[in-house]
Amino acid sequence: MIFIVAFLSSLLLSVSSTANALSLNYYDKTCPDAEDIVAKVVKNAAIKDKTVPAAVLRMHFHDCFIRGCDASVLLNSKGTNKAEKDGPPNISLHAFFVIDDAKKEVEAACPGVVSCADILAFAARDAVVLSGGPTWDVPKGRKDGRTSKASETAQLPAPAFNISQLQQSFSQRGLSMDDLVALSGGHTIGFSHCSSFQKRIRNFNATHDIDPTMQPSFAATLRSVCPANNAAKNAGATMDPSSTTFDNTYYKLILQGKALFSSDEALLTTPNTKDLVSEFAGSQVAFSEAFVKSMIKMSSLTGGQEVRKDCRVVN
Ligand code: HEM
Image (cartoon, rainbow, N blue to C red; front, side, top):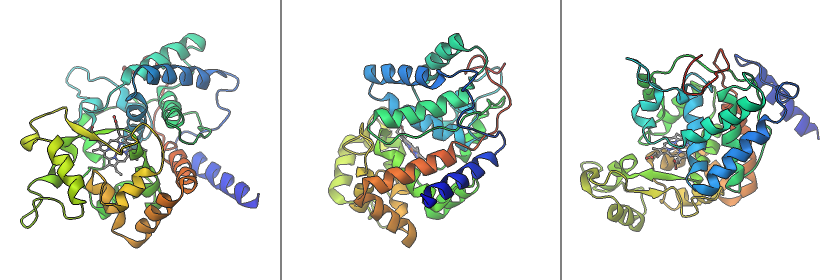
């Protein structure tokens, strides 16, 4: 009990120290059904298209890492301004229609009240739940930003990052190495294009054709799926064999040399992160608890100013 109280107070402290103070009861009076409306839309979309949950979870991560969780990733390019959405790492984002649909329904119930950034945070939580993962109360009250620049997507961590590059990227946003290991578990669901890991499976370096940290038969399978020179643009692999189920398989695969990205494998390169990978590989509960804690922390990085009427356009 003491632990829970201490945990909740430290969480509230960290949440309230961000730019927009977030709270759990933010819409209680102004839009009490907002979360239910979003959950219903995400669920219906996921029933029709199994790739929706992973897409929405990644979209929220990419939103939060650029200018905080301010829905900057949802804005369309306009005139000479190329928006985040059209930056290289975001070309593979998809399922924006889910957030549009949710916003439309929320606007019909309570116009001008619920930010797109909050809707995306709810949807990311719903995506995890729909995949069989843990649930949590999302702190609310984010505002939507007015700026979105494709050039800023260069600040997103890349799949070729080593552990110190990952550490830097996360710590710049107030996130720890523990957060890095827990949040990387988002890779328990979804799909990756060959382009994101092809450097590991051909011409890796002067001495190795294949990244020696990869399990050889795993690398061979990836080579058979991904033609040389990225010739098949849509080809790729699921993040893990249970790619629609939010479980701890991702960590087991890392330990077996079967992770897709160098950034996944990199979690084994410091003693602390390696210990955590082993802990999560051995305990779904430990992973779920850590993931929830780190998601609340990441999704509380705020930065916007307004409540957009249309998630694709500033007011
Ligand atoms: C630690 C740094 C991270 C790197 C370098 C990274 C990199 C990537 C890359 C390269 C892809 C594949 C994109 C493609 O080729 O289509 C991907 C997919 C994905 N990532 Fe990450 N990621 C990171 C962290 C995260 C975090 C923190 C989350 C969420 C908590 C996340 C959730 C996802 C999901 C769900 C997918 C699958 C998307 C889909 O199927 O549409 N990633 N990531």
